[in-house]
Image: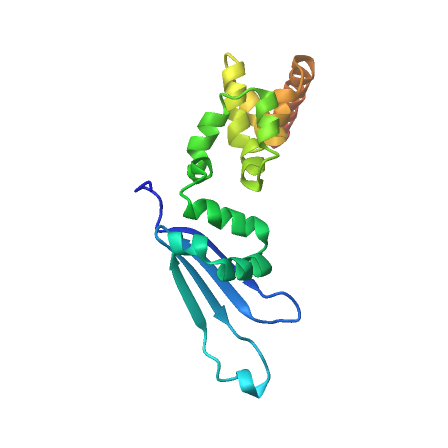
Length: 188
């Protein structure tokens, strides 16, 4: 397992399926799967029930079908599959990279690839529509960015500015410069 991975690889909490009010936590560390539960009930027979915890090594978890069934019932099969992959050493290293590094990588992709990548997860959707990414893409497509262009990008956004054709962009720039000029003259 990669040594630069954090100690906690995955954590999720949730409530048991209805009508249960029980609370559950699933924690996957580099070496263990930890499953915790808290019984929530108004019934007198459950008032003295203490929280429970099961700790399994990754290898033992892969063989513990009872625990797997509990996790699937509480958190769903997608979470169970994800925990299986973590226990088998299959990590999504791309998801673990910092946003700045990912933005730098994304700026080299084709526009079609950026559009496809934005549909893979919420994180990539946010990154693929971020102003930082589109500023980098705009800078790589444009020889020189004037201060007026930067000001316009602040108003309309780098992505919108990238997809605006040159004639429309020139018109927007003229209007922006005229507005700034009229504001200056009214201040004097």
